[in-house]
Image (spheres, rainbow, N blue to C red):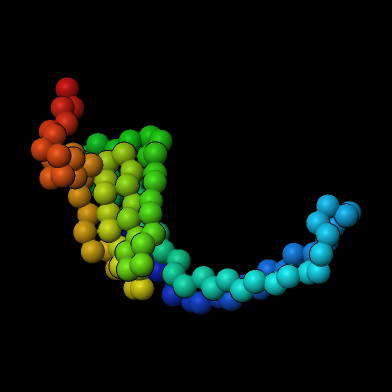
Length: 107
């Protein structure tokens, strides 16, 4: 089941000199975490692939200006970056068929 936590947390990080390794004045940076959600699950992969799932899932993803893309063994998913809404999800076989005309043989 997908869960979504929309709390926004601001974290302030400060770097300081330690044992003379880093010389200079302390600097601070601000980081805001906007979305926290569960992506593709094993159950999602099984649903997309007629009950077949993969272990390990070999996950990979990318974040753009508007979207988050996740690719696993078994699934390709696009999320809206602002709301974390799942916009599209395909089996990995359908993904490769759609973009390259390659049909994966499971046998």
